[in-house]
Image (cartoon, rainbow, N blue to C red; front, top):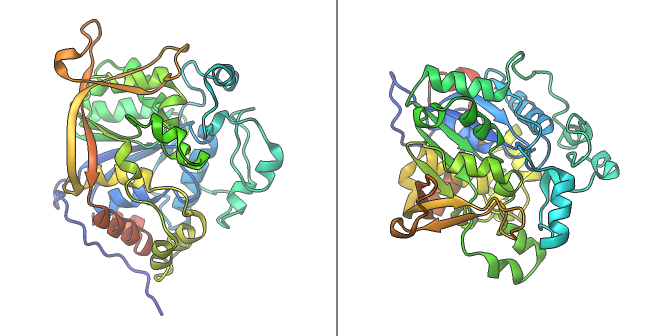
Length: 372
């Protein structure tokens, strides 16, 4: 009989008196919980979890976060509902852009509304952002959450308040769109500079040829839906004066999910290893998990570079929402761009160890309070 217990092999800079603080902003899904556990098991203090609109609407993705936390008794972690709508972009605008420049392999929340598809257990797309697909919670068996969002405060207000409360201490993790972060930057001009850092999943460079070769799935692996769902917010966030910005785009494709690895995870049976085994699938890399690993365990990085970054916000451009890189000598001078860390290679074996450990020996509220 396998005993489900708490353990950690992480090395961390956390001590008994100080735990790094983090806010995790993501478009959470059925098997999207691993970044939360990576932070907890590395000894980090999760100040809060925020939902955003990217793969689906912010309400649905936030409910997935609540439901998966509830599975393991982690309702002690507060969850905040993020902004429903991108700053300017809308499904109709996206469709008009796609008619001119070509559709994205994965359209996320902007895919056409399909109520039949939702009834089969898939998340809502287009239509009303307040619409909830309850079948998507019954499908994995964890049901609609009984715990709720923190009331009477928006995700953006929460983020601004916490960064003001802990200046220089809070890392911002972004695994989805940047709408909440951009709104926080605009609401409080000190938000970015008073955060500790911003680490993102997304920001692909030089992948256009790969988008033309092979299957539509391969093109999907090279597309930047997290950035393209809200290009204007992406521009605001990635040109804001965060002390450090780390980009995990191309590198997030380094380690693919495989059936052998999912089988290995399920050798220790917990509610979370079962969700990974049944619903993570073998078509995609460990995108969000890679960015989380880079944030909480920087020693996992084997190669990186630095450059200045801009975001294409020209609606008439086929690169709308994508990043563009500059060396310092050639960077634009009419706008303030930030130098970013662009991760090129990580220790893939170590990443897999962390993912497996997170699913097999997940934390609880009691253990999370003590660090990893």
